[in-house]
Image (tube, rainbow, N blue to C red; front, top):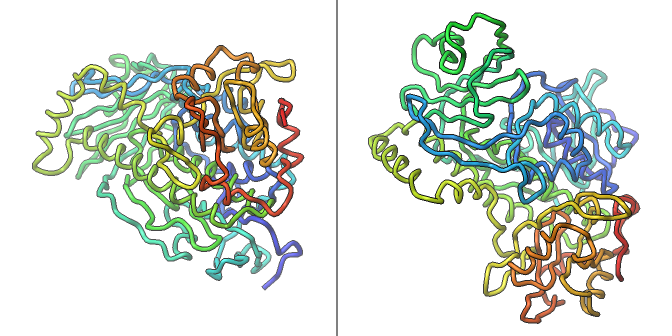
Length: 526
């Protein structure tokens, strides 16, 4: 076995799909080196994921590919539930300007996204991608460096990593290595996925259609200028030809161009790993959770994993933060993943009618619920509920802003109009409605971050209104732009006894790294 010259690396990432590459980019922007090990030599050429939300577009912005993704993405109107005769039962509308500064739903072509991510990866010397390799072992299971063995055309090799990120999909070797097992959330169906290119006048509302027909449930959406996707639950016995299946969406007797790019069968499952971490080995994406695709959150959940973990891992590896900071990855992400999977399963039941004696009753209840004023709008906003109280979310007697995301309006910084996150940089931030006093200034100085008065940002008043509605004079934002703590209008200040304080204590300088400082357009008030 060959021990590579650079055998000791900060992070090894197993799997270079969208989740693995995004994790590498987020780490690189914080100055953390990584090696990605991928069994394929190039990106997977066929489309899989097709939808993303505004929160995940904010993550892609943080990874440095926001503008490139915007050039390929197509905003969508939202989701419609149709009955067997394609009559609208309910609409879950999505706007073009969500909380995070992007359309609430965007359609895209996954191979295009992967190419954008790979191109960005190639521009970062902190990242090394090794394709055409097979990872053969991960261990030992300790708190120290982790040994990763792999095989390529030259033989066997090994690396030692301070942390290993398992982004290696549903059949994850990493999950097996840490002894994690699946919790079955009781959904399994076989579906056919069909991607088509045509210039036909396809009947589309520029959103996602879910056909709630127990006999033949289906999903349809437009994902590009001339690209469309249909998904149909498979029946036993002979299947209908593609043209017959999609005929309800095409002009009558259409005989023009119609290219089937892909027709594949998948088993949609709902599963959750019973643990996501062992020592310095972590599970992300499909290695940690599997969700049916009915609310478009499969890839989104994996990118949320990457965003949640990477800033914490960088702080531990680079600045000597408390190891317990890494415990918050699973405690924060696993409940959210379970929530999303359950929503997807409920949507699947709504579409298919389920497979038990209560199916007809559920359909009647769904039809009645869809007519309740305001219910569909509420359901549509529930894909990313606030984080529950924990070490990195300080919540008082009322829920308030803690655990929620800060909005991202356009602001003025450095003489330019930019998005808020680009102005703040990649580290913590303090936003205040009033001039920062000694306590806020001391907090900002201790974390090496910015204390910013929102009225100085030149936005449209969004941030001031948000603080006012949340009964807060100031908020402390995490690097992932989740509110960690607040100063309420009642006058209590940030406190050194907060649970997050010892976790963020570092053994090295709190001053942001050169990479972080160079991307921040605002001057600290400290």
